[in-house]
Length: 270
Image 1: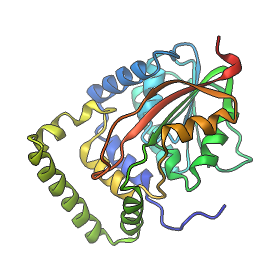
Image 2: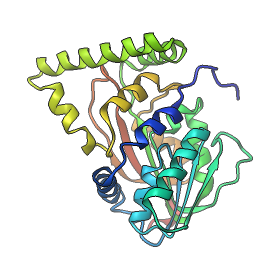
Image 3: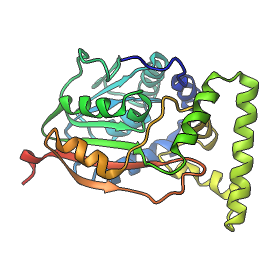
Image 4: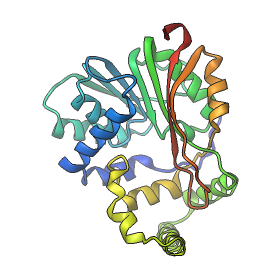
């Protein structure tokens, strides 16, 4: 499969973000992962993190008692960043890392009790195939945990903006980031809210950083989105059933956040 040459350098963004990972962000990430996986707790299970980014989610899984974590990413810098974060914040050796492409039909990944991919597969260039490929690594009775951009009326516009951003020079990128933040601030004021409060509370969202996420959103290309019904039907073809979904209403004007899902094989559901 041929992928457009424009591709956001996620690894560089995660490498910069990793310097901000400290106790508070780690605790927040652990709490949010535990809440998401209340129907499939991590403790004592193997955990495969597809698209590990900064390694924060892999670290959260280890903190929640995963007996083995395997972290994989397409971006070599993301894998190196994950290794650094885990080495710094985890004393055990029950984790491994790998550079790989989930679209590679020959990729070898460990079958795991929990296969987790948060905000990743919509950036592969072939989201549907990437989603289907993840099912190959879910153990019997295991869970497939996905977070994917929800579809909005502005998705096609954002795809063009993202492609432009990835091909722009650094000066133009900085201008675009500042304009986005300024417009978002005005938009929030019109709704009786402030940008300052949004930024101050931003770490409550996955323990992330607002300005790194702005860069991630503007540059996140390749870009696709999906409606819950489309995803559920796609995974039904692999005999997976949705057991939990968190679908958010959004206009899409300033971006499409991720909807979250947990799937299990129908034959494994009592």
